[in-house]
Amino acid sequence: MSGGVLGMALDSATPDLAAATWTFVHYSMTANVNGLTTNGKFGLHLNGTTASGQAISIRVHANITDSIPAVCFPSYTVTGVCSAADTSEIPAYFVATGFLRVVTGEEASPKQPISLLIEDAALNPFGAPIVISSTDGSFLVVATYSHARTVWQSVQTAGTLAGTLGSKPVSGNFVQNIRTIEDYVAGTATDSGQISLVGMTPSSLNANGKFHGTSIIPKTGTVDCSPPGLAGTCTETGYTSTGTFSMDPNGVTLSGNYAVQWPAPSIVFDGNMTAKVH
Image 1 (tube, rainbow, N blue to C red):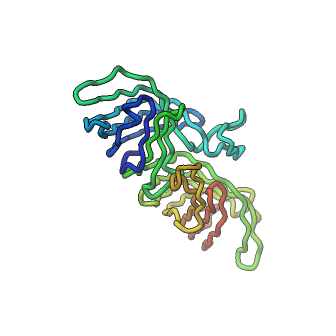
Image 2 (image 1 turned 120 degrees about the vertical axis):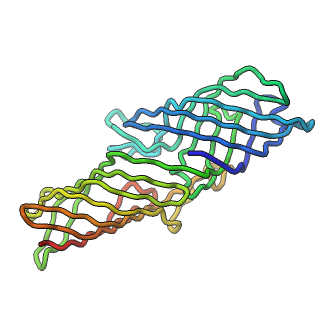
Image 3 (image 1 turned 180 degrees about the vertical axis):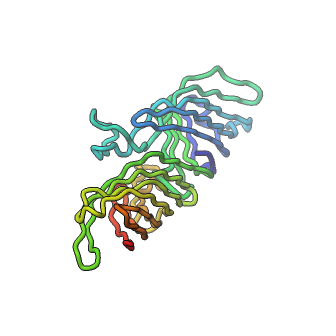
């Protein structure tokens, strides 16, 4: 993630910083989330002018050391803390620890330790503003992003299915292993992976196969989840996925299309699939 256009900047650490007018920001972050472990890098450069008209900047260099989850799996906990039985999460905020340095004119201050919370772009798509704040509340930046992409690897989803094959009822379960590349500025994604039909009635439809398709984040049906005083910095959204699949169970061939809807906040889904059996 990187950006952006400055919406707001406040720094109450010293009287000089509190009186400064901040006019420009650039930041960048790369983070990896593996199960419940998060790491990465974060940097921020903030420019402004002091009350006396002198140029001033703040530079932050930090390591991503942790995250605060938006939702935990498999418990689906949304309290911000995962249970002992959880094995993965989708972050709401990344936690960064590092140092801040103030440059006034030609003079640079000593390094000052800082701990930050950085909002995940997934919480406010389409390049909308995100919140970057110190954990003690003394430093706050609200800025858009010009680039934000998540590569989701080995995502597992599962569910039940029911329908008909000709005039006969069909039922069972499906399991997917998904790789998705998601662009939060465009609100689009490409999807691919494996799908299995298991426990099927009739059993001749038990099968393994592949799928690929595209997804979009719809702008309708959204829910504002912004914290007080920071309007427009959080939006719960849905998700729409469409594509094709093919399978070869027990000497026959299944191929067809799927359409899936994820209502906000996009952690459960339903949809339909239509296939030809040869």
